[in-house]
Image 1 (cartoon, one colour):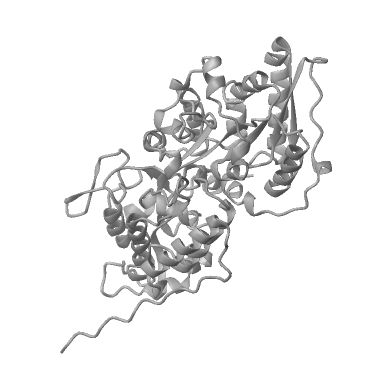
Image 2 (image 1 turned 90 degrees about the vertical axis):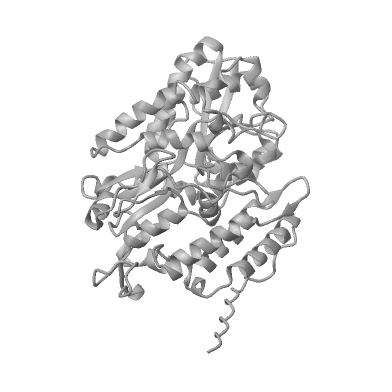
Length: 487
């Protein structure tokens, strides 16, 4: 299962029964003093190849660390997210919750937000070295009271994938590969690498069937054969967080507020899709032109997407000419990075916290090379990143600027600004953001009043977090017709 599929696991629905779970693995070396139960199924990890790797990790733990410390690790597998969630809910209610679960993303963990243990006491007790992680990455899991909801395992910084062949054909310089570097236009002028500059470059890389780019008065937006950019497979909150991170929900007051920055970000997107035509619309994304995916088609110059997208370029290695660059500065003139992340979480109900912490640090330490490879995961621990890069270089031989990925991690958005930060009725909130995506990127986006739609979004989200859900699908608000100028 690739990382793209992982993003959509929460949408899967299946009948849930405990009988669908695989039995825990038997101890490798006889009876042990303590059994730690590891649950897999809230994210990736459930295809045959991954299960084989996970069982191997279990066997290796039991024959080494587990044997020495009197711990037996057992593993169970869920069929999909909803089946796993229903099973865990049943186990929690019966007092038989697993000890540890994962890998699970930020969004996937939200449904059980009140079940996770604060790991800080165990981190302190075991003198676990948290300085081995970039402080910015640690901020993903730091809680308001100074605790840690998890320890980093796999991270996927947002980066800019770009098609080198399309840049060469247009006679354009490649995007910057270092934060702070400017972009150089064909006339020699330089500009800060921000979303304004990105838009200008993307416009020059958007081409119609007659060969006119989107800067030309002859450009035909109804016959585009090449687009300048998109946000590959991004949900709406990720698109907005890419352009400018913002917290829309305040837990202390239970209030929703859509910031001016998000309003500006949505307006920037609408203009890019429907006025300047360099961002592909939802209809364009579904067209044969942009298959099997927009960037993979070779007809898209740039895609902003998390690093897990490397999963989906393997079939075109050597054919699609590409590399990676840093994301643009956000609206506030600073560099921020929307980082997807997977990790393992400990249930606060565990009866064996010390043994579970031993397992946790094994999964996020010794087992990283095995698990990172099977999950397609970029390790949060710096010492395992170069082996990951070395492996990728065997597949992608063009000399990818992997330092971009490690540099971007230094600008990770903290937990309160994360694009999957929690709120009451999280899935309904995500569904409402999804309908807003359709409003902007769908065919209605050409005429809607973005600010009015943001007002609707804010009102609906407040209703959702209050538990009084909107009763109808929002109807897009048309943009008022411009007033005719006096003659």
